[in-house]
Length: 265
Image (cartoon, rainbow, N blue to C red; front, side):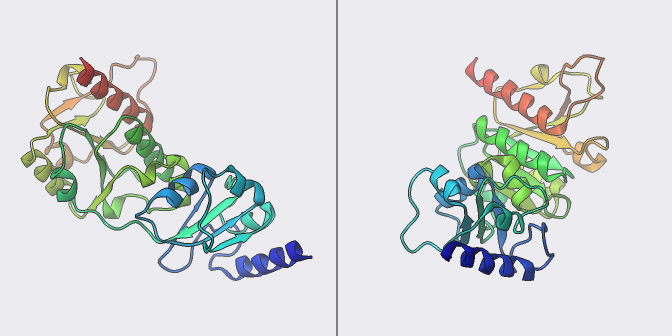
């Protein structure tokens, strides 16, 4: 009886939420995350303020560690959780509503150790791609990703699920003017390499010994002219002529690997 009551209460709340079933939208000013890796990373992130966690019993058991006794938790069934996320999203029995991460300034990143690469994304708007890039950035110890605030996806469940926890680990700086940000990056001692298939040099040939900022544009359109003009060098990945280009998230992962192995050498 208690479980049925919990389900009725949750179902009523979900039905009244803005956007209706399958919207994945959180309450005003909040972010909704789902999936074990994304939710667990957010729960472990001391910079996150949490509003409420909806979960199945199996979802709670999958988490590493215990929730505080007073944590706002509501148990629910998989069907009820499906009402709280984007349509057909794999919530894995966990849906967390929390406050968005605090904004970061570019200077916060540039003032730190600059031996780690920075990724600059020019109009990469697909949340799956940005999430995958964040995951690669975490795997290869990048210092941050930088995007223009008007031409990047918002922080949210789809992006966080694709990032597999990396949204909580890799600093994400949103700037008003990407060209001005690249100027600041150069002043901090970074060599700015724009990735484009039209370049003559490969990334291996263009990599310097010092700090690197990789600049990647949207698939198809590539970098905008003004952004490209703010790069110190242009480089391409040595892919086969059988393929015209790579997905931007794949290109980012390969480029980060090239930097990591260069550092080892």
